[in-house]
Image (cartoon, rainbow, N blue to C red; front, side, top):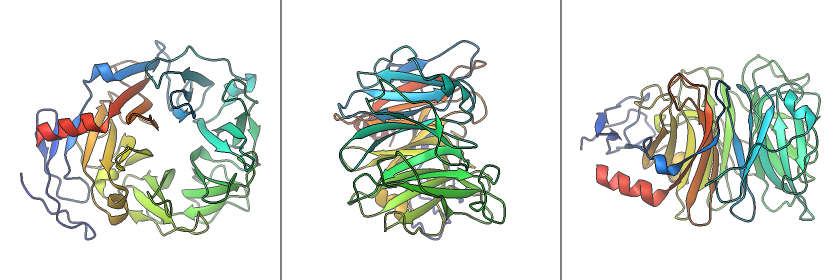
Length: 387
């Protein structure tokens, strides 16, 4: 195995090769590529479950939520590219099978942007599910019976935004308090919240009543030469820090990272990540052994899986220290440009990850929704065989 020195000053010597399928070696010795192995599970058909597919119809951009019984997963996604009627399905067996499309309120057909679904709990312990739909204004629907019934979409304020809310984070030691993150590129944010100069900004809003109402937006990230968007948040294992991975939409840089040690009151300046973590719409969950799996669309500038649905496996400390991590995984090959992988990521009690997203999984056909159920011990075995 050849030892390669990554030129990024804040990454020290890394010894690894990138393996795709039959051990094709990628020697990425610049900031634009990576040196850790890439596993390929595209052909693991027995791990894949079709969630929804409709001939000739674009189905895209799902998000998911796992309920407290540990096996019920709800998913929402648009019938169209971002914009389109919200589709709604349920799995009651941890993603092995999925229901037919479930009824939704009438005005869900008017959704203008990728819907996102989240669990929130107020200070009294009342559980809710909320769904956000973006552009202008940002709207929200609420369920107080675990998704059996929903309100119509109603504005949370007059301002707008893109892909809200990429992340919703419960605040530590503050029951019923949440922060939510989204972005805008200057088109949908109202004055006085629209910054100058015009460009991509990542915003935070807060709720103190279990997600029923939300406060005014504040900017938490901006970069003069990068277009930062689609925030994906994850807490440190000790709970003291929130890290947010950011898509770089200008495609000139790797993805970026911001962190907060005070529950979102202040944030660090954006720092560029290693290429191994470069992609769109990062969604993370911890395995039982403390490692992270982060699922995303691969937009690394030099990668044999560019445009595919991939995952990164490593430690939280790898992200903070700027290390490449343990390995990457091509979950599924995408057959049209980079149009795939706004993923839902859930972890079951037995360590099974249920990864759900859309993509052009069949050549010359419209995208459809797929779930992949996989455990890290399975990936570790594959990794060991390819060393």
